Amino acid sequence: MVQIIKDTNEFKTFLTAAGHKLAVVQFSSKRCGPCKRMFPVFHAMSVKYQNVFFANVDVNNSPELAETCHIKTIPTFQMFKKSQKVTLFSRIKRIICCYRSGFMSNLIFEFCGADAKKLEAKTQELM
Image (cartoon, rainbow, N blue to C red; front, side, top):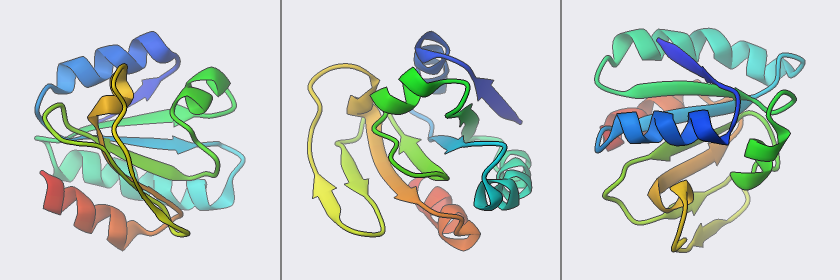
């Protein structure tokens, strides 16, 4: 099941609940065509991978959270685990960095775009 996240407090609670399990967060918008194509894929994955936490953030309803998470384009998928170092990936460039505070310190993977195969492959790899 995909949890709907509306604000930073809900986001922190979601990540805390995930603990050391993989948490996959989709940043999207109801008006975005590629996002609409990914909604059923993302939901199906949440049913298939019961040991992974899935959440959706609508960037139009939660602009502060989108900014905090450095969302520049949608759809963007971020994957979190408490015990991992931070590694950010995008289609354009790769950046390796470590955040010293906040929930971004748990981010282990990020990619942008409506690539269902990549999403599932990376989810399987990081579980």
